[in-house]
Length: 239
Image (cartoon, rainbow, N blue to C red; front, side, top):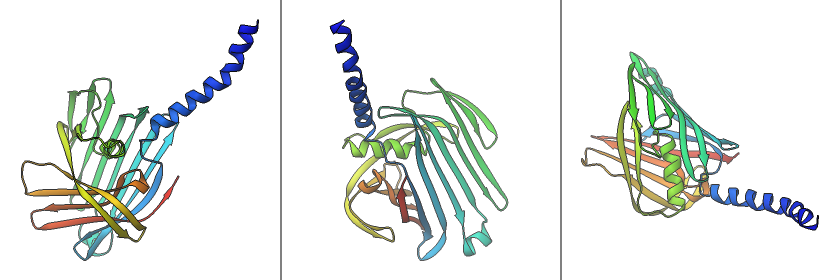
């Protein structure tokens, strides 16, 4: 009887330890937050981006919405919805559904993915696909969560299998330094700069990842040909 009583007394302690362990395992994941960003080409404002990252138990929802404003809205009327929903186990991020829906004057495009086991099915521009995938394959939104997790863990190798536009591809990032970044949302000290590694220099994408946001982006600079699009955070709050 004494042994049974001792085991019963240990139950709350074990549950507390397991809860603490679960919390520690997920600490490397980005924190839940909501943020607003401005999108500009040079000095011309193009629009805004709203992002929300939420957790519910072992589920995550990372949703992004971009809309053109001002002259850009008159010319393009562009709106982009990008959603990634899935689950995590410890620090392993497993997307279940992904949606990229871009609408603009004259047309648009939709990229839909359903992840199940070692398969990714969906359609891109109304063309269906059914792919065999490797473990830890991400979509283009959950990729940001995986990158933030690995930056927080100070991983040297930043390589990720990704499904994009109905195809399997590989994303590799390279750390290129640290920088103190002043924004409307405040000053982020020692943001980590990473760039997407590409075989060609025709395109360049650089992310500024801030510890204050669990190493989610506070600035993104994308250059393609002679165009440079910059996205910078305006405000954010923890959820």
